[in-house]
Image (cartoon, rainbow, N blue to C red; front, side):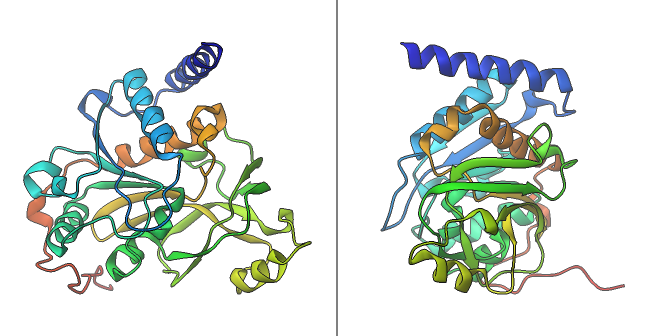
Length: 282
């Protein structure tokens, strides 16, 4: 009972603070799909907590939330109702067929939104188009530990009200096959990590050409759609912690504010691996 009251108070306080700011989104017209399927391999225990958090945010702000772990939801007829899709700590292959992958891709091409949380970076590791949408794919992370995050663009709507230097416990996710398109707005301060054990050499190796800062939060206008990803959120307790909940809500709000209409007449792909039609150069 005590934990319930604490969580309730957290959400009421957060809701009041955010509503006072005004966000310009007509939440009554927003509907999101939270997709929770995981492929073979590690499954995060934070997923049900993330779902509960997003459902509570929906109740507080007036947007509709559907939840599914069934890849059969990926049809044009079904996806056209959603403003954005949220993948909370998904991992490995989350679609059963290439037709489902194609329908997901066409939703993005139609101008749909996408929010990825934490281990989403390890999702669909064998699908190049999806990895480009994410900005890369998972390589490795050091152990869960206290770390420091730096707001590179503190004025960005998804970082509003967050500490410019944010100290929390989490996992620093390193990627590979990094794409050049995403705009990074918050970074891991690599100097805050623990280099004193065997992870030290791995941190240096995975950081690659990055020296002191490494991407942690980014957004991307990719192939017609609007994406926002945070590598944070490993701990299930994050989803009742006010600062992280604010961070997550504001990411959802940012994408919801970008998506004006999901219009499948703009979708062009006929296969999951069709070449991306990048904007023409001037």
